[in-house]
Amino acid sequence: MHNSESRERSAAAPSAAHSEERAAPERNRRHFLGALAAAGVAGTAVGAGGAVWKAGRDSEPQEVAPTELGRRTVPWHGTHQAGITTPAQARLTLLALDLAGNAGRTALARLMRAWTEAAARLTAGVPVPGDDASALGSGPSSLTLTFGFGASMFTKTGLERQRPEQLAPLPAFPGERIDHARSDGDLLLQVCADDALVCFHAARSLIRLARGTATVRWQMSGFTRSPGVAPLAKSTPRNLMGQLDGTRNPEPADPGFAGKVFVGAGDRPVWLRGGSYLVMRRIRMLLDAWDGIDTDRQQRVIGRHKDTGAPLSGGGEHTPPHYGKRTPHGEPVIPVDAHIRLAAPEFNAGAAMLRRGYSYDDGQRDDGPDAGLLFLAWQADPRRGFLPVQRRLAQRDALNRFIRHEASGLYAVPGGCRPDEYIGQRLLEA
Image 1 (cartoon, rainbow, N blue to C red):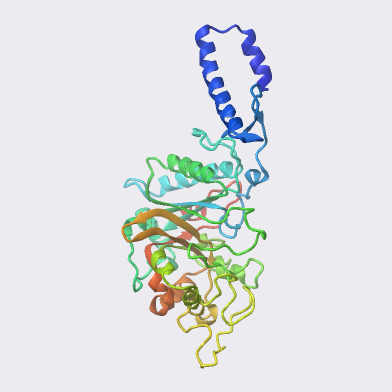
Image 2 (image 1 turned 30 degrees about the vertical axis):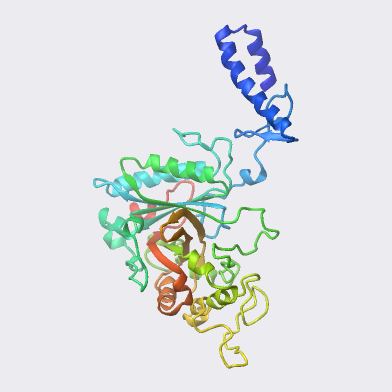
């Protein structure tokens, strides 16, 4: 296509001014390729538009198809919203919005319909009307969009009687320093993809659709390991402390998984069946303090070996911890204040959550790195999941010296939808 277009332009005998406009970028391109050759760079140079230039004076851009990674899609319609049990993509954009003062139930329903229609297109790699084209040519890159409602939304829209009991505000916990400007919110939007530009573009598209109805309250970005960088696709990723994070995460194939993560068919409220509850915590890691202790101490704080993730009681990463095992001196091999002991379902009446966290790095503060974990925990009922575990951790966890909870939120996330529905329709049109 490029060569035929060039022949057509040459046959058109353009003016000298237009010829100069075309010649300047061609000279710049050749200068760039010449510099690569002078530097001894062989092979190809890849352009942002998905084209590949073979090193040479007279070569033309050759279009290449998006990689398999860019072409991957996650189905939009279904019983549950995507982005919950979906394997974690490399990038996260998380944001909360607040409804405008004059936006009631009808306006919110209109917004959710528009968001649903846009999400169906974006996750399939199809542009939405008025698209800014910032991710044009990138492919869907496993994009998922997940929507939730905060407790404050129900008051603003006159839906208080439909607000679940489970959505009661989270209590204050010892040691936390919650920034309320970066917490809560009427609406939650989780955007995940294997490409940062795709995340930005999808979030921007939905923010644009919300104009006049809702404004952004806060926005955060996160990352985890990129696909293909680890030898095993399902290996456990590491957090910024260098620890394997997610070893005992429940798996969809586990018995009783759905009952721990999703609101059941016989549960109330009816409109939330097939949905879930999301707890968000922005947890800053005090990395300078963490780096100041040796590896042995770090392992005792967590209760696992840093290199393999195996419990200190022995075995491999997925060996069940033996909490009763003791040293020759009679002390627990896994300390009584170790993180994994206090968070274990065995010590919390079986409480379990599906953790789907992302690391964040927002540069430096006066007291060290502003980096840590965007903790995202999905559960059927936070009263039986997050709350009992966090109460126990807040009281005794040895890790508390090295972390600080700085933002928080709890959201009701409706179930998925069919092609003729929109997210939240069973609530907003009840």
